Length: 145
Image (cartoon, rainbow, N blue to C red):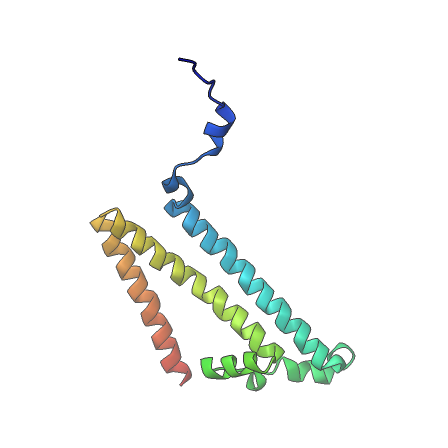
């Protein structure tokens, strides 16, 4: 009976499935790709805005109109409609909304992880944090409306 030598490099490369789906890696990827998505949306929005309105480069008055709050979409429906019609400001606003959603998603993912780990103390604390975050968004919306 011949024994084949084991290749240590193959053993080092193969990782158990739980190592590739660890909570830390999941949260790290959420943060990394969320910020990257937000950056891409904001950059795309800026490119679209300046492509549609090249006068923003040379006119201070035109640039002031660009930054006026009344010309920025304030409702989610307005943002989505603007994205559908390739309006730069809507893409910028979508990027900002994605950036605001990342911490909330991070808390939600943490809550899920703590539930899987059956850690009641952290499930309770994380649930309170998530409820407070959602409440702050609702109260902020009521303030605008």
